[in-house]
Each structure stands twice: as C-alpha cells, then as structure tokens.
Image (cartoon, rainbow, N blue to C red):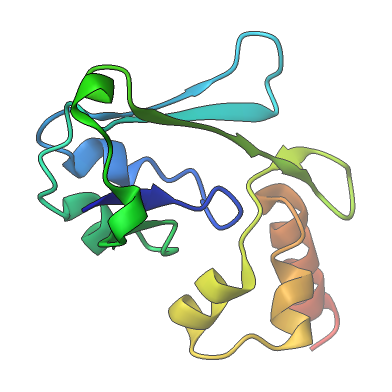
Length: 139
C-alpha cells in the first residue's frame, strides 16, 4: 500500500503537507520557473496514516493497494514521487493562477455549470471585477 498522486487535479492548497505528521510531503516553487511547483512525497518517510488523502479537497492524493505499487526493500530510501504541478493563466488578463479541475468544482458546488467553469477560469482579481459588473452594474 502507498500513496498515489495525480498532478492534473492538484489545486496547490498545501493541505497535504500541513496534515502530514511525518513531514513526507514537500511542495515548493521550482527555481527556474515561477509557474511550476514541485511536489515530492517521500515513501520512506510516509507512515501511511492517510491524512493527506482524507483531507485533500481535490482528490489528488489517494491510498493505493495495488500489488504492483509495493516497492522493493532496496528502494526503501530512494523511492519517492516527484511530479510538477503547473499553473494555468487567467482567461482575461493572462496572470498565472491555480487551475481548478472540474472534479473540484463538482465537489465544492454540487454541480459545475458552464457559467461556473467560466468564472473559475479567471484570476481572483478578474473574478471580482466580473462578479461586481454582473451583480451591481448589470443586475
């Protein structure tokens, strides 16, 4: 048994790193590119408590019980997950931002309409401007 990570649905909230009692998860900006984050999970440090998968809001981390997911003893201190999580760009201004996957929107809002998807393709600043204009200027 071990933890599996899907970088396509990670929202870079850092909850997994915060709740990991073994400090086995590290998320940081890459040195050469501010729009890419490095996610590392050290299996040799992981206690398989399941906190990361339980508290992950997007489902990017999950416990795996696949037979082929078991690592050999000789890889005990070198076995880790190293993946990159890239930022996306605001549909309006082009600012780098975290992409919210459809599964996250469905979990957070119950359903994800095209309007909701469009809304979350905007950075927080453009989202506020868009929401203000929709609610106040065009009621």
